[in-house]
Each structure stands twice: as C-alpha cells, then as structure tokens.
Image (cartoon, rainbow, N blue to C red; front, top):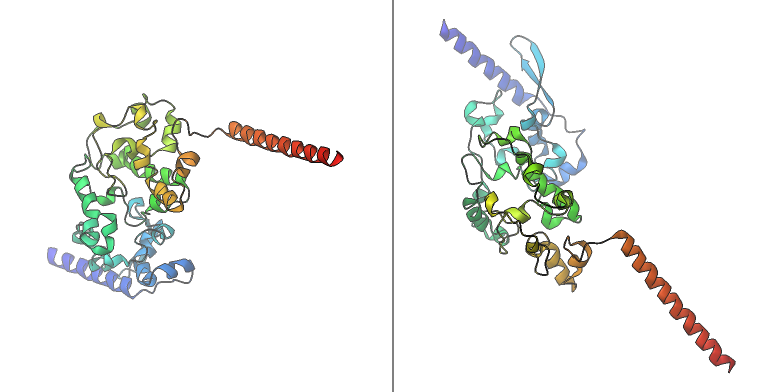
Length: 324
C-alpha cells in the first residue's frame, strides 16, 4: 500500500513544481528603481512572489484546490530593503541553489550551507581596501565565534547596508548599527537560537552607565565592546563583557577612543577637506565638545551685539572726523 502513496506524492510534487515554473510573474507593479539597480528583477520575482509577501498561494492542481498561507516572518524579504542593500544587483540563485525552483522546497536545499563573506570577497584585489581577511581573523578571536554563528547573524544578506561609511546622518547610522546588536541581545527569540543563556536585560546590565539614554543614542555598542583596530573599517573582535570599556576617560578625553572608532570615517573626510577638527567640534559626544542649544544661541547673540557695537563705534568715529 505504501508504493502508490509515495508515487502519488511524487507525481503531485512534480505537478506543483511544473505549475510553479510555468506560472508567469507580474512585474508591472514593481518600483522602477528595482530595474535600475538589478538586471534579474523578473527572475527574482519567481522567489519574491512568495518570499516578498506576507502570504503566499499554495496550490494543488490535481485536486483543483488552493489556499493562502502566511509566510514565516524570518523568510520574508522586503523588496525595497533588498534593492537598496549591498547585494542589490544579485540574482537569488547567485547565492541560493537552483533546487529552490522546486516547490515545495526540498529539505536538502533549505539546509544548504550559506556562503560567508570570504567566499566571495576574500583574497580579491577588488575588495582589498575592506580587509575582509582581517575581519575574518578578528571574528575568529571574538566571543561571537561559536557554532552556527555566521556573518549573516549580524549582516542580513537581503537587507544589509554599509551604513556607517556612507552615512550623511551620523545619528541614523548609530541607530542602524545598534539595532544589529539589539536584534539578538534585545530579542530573546533570536538569542535562544544561538545560546541557552538566560535572557539579557540590556538596560539593567548597563545600570552603572551614567546618562544611559544619551550614551545609547550617541555611540554604538561596539565602541565599548570591541578592540580598536585601525586597519579595518569596523572592528569585529567582540570582547567578553568583563573586558568592555568602563573608564569614562577612554572616551571623554583629548585622545578619545571615539576618534578611532565612531568618528574615523568622518575624520578622514574632514582631513581631506582641510578641517581636521570639524567632526570633533560639531558632532563629537565628548566632554567639552557637547553642544548646548541655549549657549549656542547666546554666543551668536553676543557676537552679533559685539559686531554692531563695533560698527556703531566706527560710524561715530568717521562722522566726528568729518565734522572737524
């Protein structure tokens, strides 16, 4: 009795697969910028018509039945995020097996090994400036070096942006980078996928930190939780919590570590423009450089009044000289 059952299931799978491949995709409602950055938009839609939606259509042509199912949130791909991310020009099958053209997807494909950064970016002169090899070495020495922890746990390949080095708004970049950490450290569901440790309360674990809210909004987690490495763009050696920075003078000093971490990109740009201290004066979260809106306005007012007094004095001197 088992043979007909297995055979029927196989025929059904083939029928569903054939229907999936044959079904045309509609790209007329997609945003034009997708096509500007990617040559495989139509091909990708064969995946995103399910994975780009909150629900997908499950059909059984043999029984003439169809039902909508919810797409698992972890398997949903935001089109806008994907076509704005660092891998925006890719086809899905550049990284994923062609076995995913079979529906339902076979278990072997779903458990396939994901590429890591070095698989594409390592030992290639095109990417030499980013020092991916050094980043990989730092990761090996990091507390994140554990089973099942890959690059993609922090850098979602479908949405990751190289935000910090391209950011016009430093505050926005800080929030973006910190959310990468909080995706696990403030989301216990994700945290439990990698460890059996008890849930971490980020606020309570940083109770010792004065002006906690200001620190969280002005600096990234990695400012205090990584080892400085000036040869790579972003430090990846995450330190044990016992080695995290806790001395105020590490940041609040003339030779602040923030100059070598958070502000390193901006400082390089300012130096090229000839203003080495511009970023420190205008944006730095360091004692002595924090801006106070009231004092800023007061200083401008004092400057203007002084300038007016000088003008008035000059005018009166000139008038008196003419009257003599």
